[in-house]
Image (cartoon, rainbow, N blue to C red; front, side, top):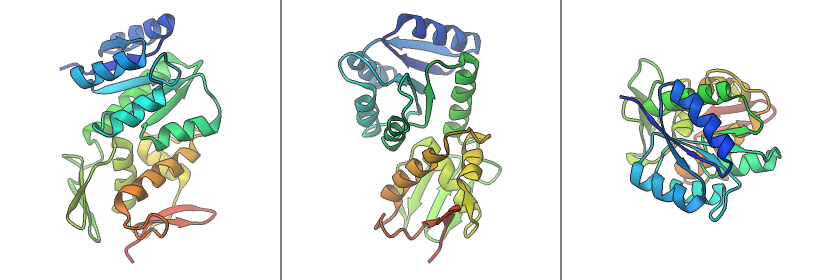
Length: 227
């Protein structure tokens, strides 16, 4: 069964380019040219992934991402001409799974789509249940509980947490965590790890300012602690 991708962009040539490459890769493609239409289609059609431009007529991409994250964990890849790191970080902190800047390689975008969908499908390795302290992850159902309370995570947040929980106490560099999440470390995206960690702490820590689980090792990276 083919998977459905919703492409949201107000530039017709960009939509056609992305649609053509995704169709050749075997995906079904839906299109939206403005924010209001994108929200409606996301809620009604329930696509498997959304490619979302930031600069849209009406509701902009960041607001769409914010609203969808309140009701859905659908994977979101931001696609935008904004190249400033601050814009990328804002999108990731709102819950986007990845970020591609224009101009872009259509082939790389398709690869990013496939990688994000693999994360969303739970292809995280042979172990089904992962446990560390009172944090428990089920890689088959992509569910997480902390002290037996369910926690909703995006696919990228889930895989990042899974990488840490698999080896509690191990110190991971940002590059190693990127590789665990994406399969390869993308140059220039190490700050995205910080954004995802910030989101994770907000969701699983009782006090994100004094994290118990995801601990910072200054000058190196992060580890999962059990104190």
